[in-house]
Length: 83
Image (cartoon, rainbow, N blue to C red; front, side, top):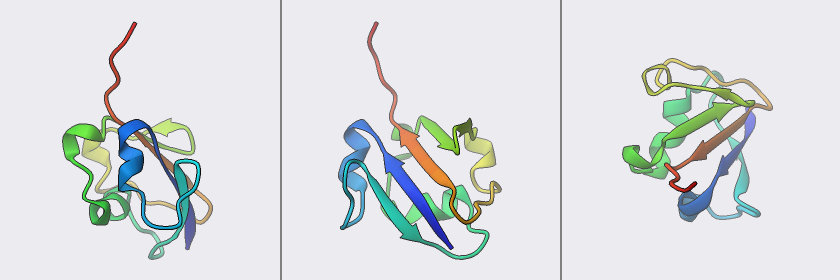
């Protein structure tokens, strides 16, 4: 199945080849989980602060179980400081 992966800020360095404008279209296994999609990218866990699927937050403990579907958008942000 195909989905869109978006990595923001410093995480964009981890995007696979072919990425443009901080996103890439990926072909993944049917019913892949959030964790299964992110694992091959070797993202440091401390940097996967905010994970959203179609705009809904996925807490860290749900990422190994949260299944993805065709056309989903998986977006990840690192912790951001500021004010």
